[in-house]
Image (cartoon, rainbow, N blue to C red):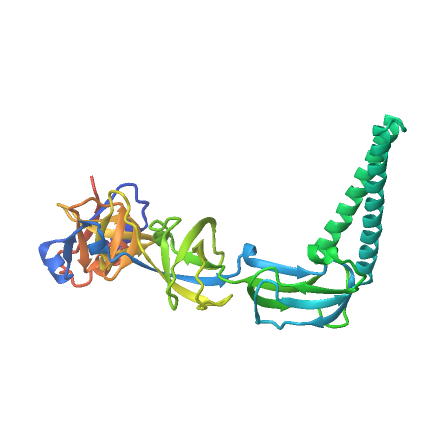
Length: 374
């Protein structure tokens, strides 16, 4: 009873110094303790292959929006959701009275600009002959310049509406306007239907540009220490690797995993938006100080990984910071030094003793005792 009370008090007491769990040889044998030396980490003894989970996303720079440049009525929708399109493929056709007004304004501006050029040419000749004053020539030049500016403005408005420069060479009043895809890609959404009246700027279709996708990747804090921007990530089902483009400063509220973004620009058709994918990365080892121990050596205590290190007078629980795991080995980034003997078998018995539960299999006449290291 006295021993149990002491163990309970030791387990509840605040840990100001490192604890040593003292066991006799008979107790260590009864607990089947076995140790192994921590080794310097390298690609051979870490098996540093990281397995990551991700979700395929459509980056904002890969989204094109086809919208109505002028007010009008949708006459025909020429594509369907999921359809692949090339740059210049007709998407929809509008009937727009506003477009006719713009064309009429352009014709008037073109006529005025032509008349202004003719007046300027005539006044320059009259000024050269000394018939008119220089002030009149300056006024004519200003009028010609303003007429040209007005024409350029009307031309730019028609180009934004989809009227080509070639069509402007042969002007005509036409209320029909064909909206085309600005780049090759896939139709994601259609926002307009035949007969719908649209205002200028209203969306007609949303396109995903071909070959540009991103993957939102989740990584644990241990995995995060082994990744850097620019790393190649093998995407299952794809021949082309993704590239790690960013490591964001935020974590997932649900899983507390770190959020990363990888860019995928392959031409192969192996991914779909919102698809869950698995990625593989070959971890880059830290510059110095990383050690490798068996995964069996780790125990969790209050959310912190620990290992039991064999000392001259007993076994010391040591908190460690871990890195990538591969196979039966895990990398320890801090907390150990090369040559430390860590317990790889019997850790459950030591953890029970550490937490004041006693050591299963220990002889009753010589109970194992945790003590503070001096």
